Amino acid sequence: MIRTSLALTFVVFFIPVAALITFPWTLITGKANFLYSVAMTGVRSALCIAGVKVETEGREKLDPARSYIFMSNHVSNLDPPIVIPVLPGRTSVLVKKELFRIPILGWAMRMASLVPVDRDNRDAAIASIEKAAEVMKSGLHMTIFPEGTRSLDGSLLPFKKGPFHLALDTGMPIVPVTVLDTLEMMPKGKIRIRPGTTRVIFHDPVEPARLKDRDQLMEAVRASIASSLNK
Image (cartoon, rainbow, N blue to C red; front, side, top):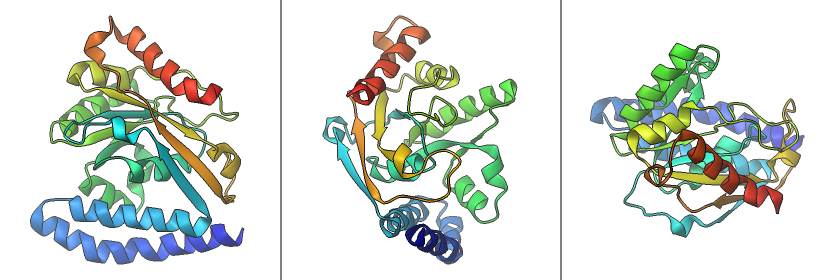
């Protein structure tokens, strides 16, 4: 619990200090790259303090010149801060709209072109997918947890359809991602972070144009993510 407390304390102090440094620069330049870089440094530092080590596998398969839609399984609140910093380049993320109400954090997420999503409102969810398509046109990746919520036991939940419409509409390849061992570190409903090592596995990109329809695309991505879960 000591490590968790130290990590949370670090985050509480880091956010306002980082905002003082990065917000003016972002507003002056109109670019969020510096803000994003500082944020990722903070995230990696917090994980290190909490005793979380991250190993990656398969990232060399990705073309640094392309934009991708990363889709990952989701069992823990640790998954986003573990996955996002190890991606090859800057990404946007579909984020619960409630988080945008948090002072400083909400402003930072807007500056970084993150996309709010309302999972309980179908029309709003569709609008979020349209906004995500616009964001990707600027050259950013998009990171999505297609289950829409955390799994209690580590098994894959049903996927939401919206993210796959995004892939079909933009033609962007999907990179299935499997995150391992975070369920034991911080299961749903728990605050304490248990130190340990997690693996982030990048699978071969899935090209939407090569598949017949949305359902086949969903099944291909699901099978790819599940392949490492089964191991």
